[in-house]
Length: 395
Image (cartoon, rainbow, N blue to C red; front, side, top):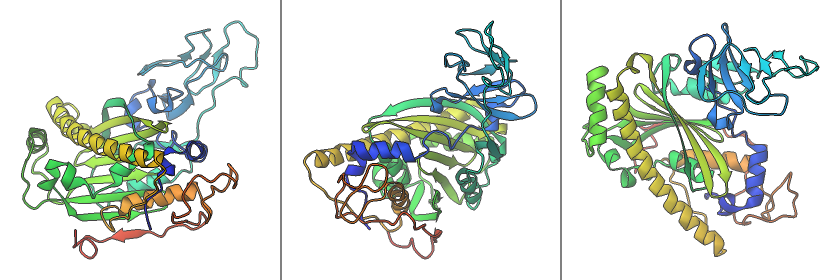
């Protein structure tokens, strides 16, 4: 099978269908550490501040952060509150969403209360009820990591914009073929010859082994390893990183006692926003030098990835604008995660034999090359386990 055609990255029709069919904002609804005390709240920025995680004194809730009167957003950032008060007209609600006051307007309080979202919590991670993908990915990752998800503590959140199609960002995260060429540390730190992967229809988990003899190429990696040795102990000898991808747009990167959660939000064909939540096991959360060292190590990798994805986005866009269609092959092991993600996209955006999009947009609009490989959207992929011993012996 060949990679996705260029149209999947630049067609407005496909982009509109992706936004309609893919659940971009609501798979990840935070972590219990965001609101670890009674009456704490945390506005979820990747929902454009429209949802708030809140501790009502007994349970963690997810409520709309939009007033039912004139629809202003109410709470900001994070903090502590006894009730939710709209800053515009002073309508107020309790921490379960029940209306307390409509500020001298006679109305049905039950009708205009905030509706709690149905949620599940697994190992501290909050997600929509009956959505099993995030839970499945976390459970599966325990094959490769001993990190205590439930005892994670949030220590930072970042938001930034990247001028690439959102799938280009996901592709880069799922591409292990570029590691040694684009990341100097990975040549002597992580060993891309030995990657173990578990794939499901709605998520993937990949783990990369450490080199037997670690050599430090940059000060950022050196500082991180020094701090790890200082606060945790001897650096582990098995997996250097574990990468979870929950389709379509959630990334969780586990590095020893750290977990970085990234929510990738499509803003336009050429731009996506990235919301990063950085967590660490609670017992290490007070060591600021350790946190800073990890952040600098990750920033270095992200800078290198940004350069890579920008080059690919620019080249692909040039070919698309010139009307040139070419779909390259996948590396059988190092790009297996990317292929699985593309299979998911093909299931969401099914295409007929003659290159027409099926479904909501009608079959008369031809937007993709008929030479692409067609995946039957009714078929579901089996679980695939790539053994580092049997399948990864060749680069």
